[in-house]
Image (tube, rainbow, N blue to C red; front, top):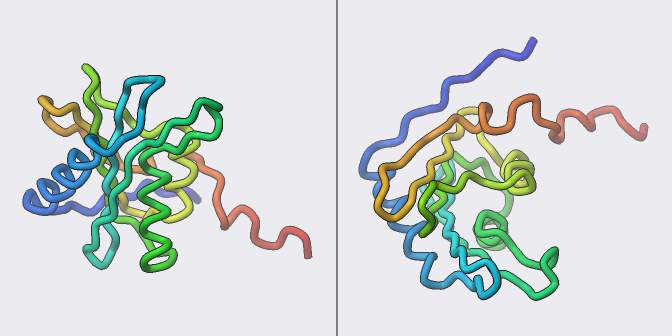
Amino acid sequence: MNCPLIAAEISEATLAQLRKAAEAMLKHAYAPYSHFPVGAALLTGSGRIFQGCNIENAAYPSGLCAEAVALGQMIATLGPMPIRAAYIACKGHSPAWPCGSCRQRLNEFASPTMWVYTATLAGSPQRMAFSDLLPNSFGAADLQGCGQ
């Protein structure tokens, strides 16, 4: 049976740190084609924050999303670990939620109670439980018993 989980709250102070970390990445984004810089910050279960920015490429599929860069930073530093929250910042008029590919990437490391936050620079954060952002997801558990 698939039961909905309620995402664990994070403090206002931690949310402010996460937002600041994501927004700080906007100035490092390399977005010469879309002109849409994105910054991401991931909060691990141990309280560490990892940052990333989007890196575009003239061969569009070769670019990297901010969430993927932040995941790479986390794994290169600590190895795979659960993510408690993600914050996505952008300079657009509307908040930017993770794309489908990044939702699947985050799913690999999402804690069962992970929150995703997003906001524009001038806007208030919006949040959604990760399980609502990627319902009925495909993950490692779906591969159990395959190929044996």
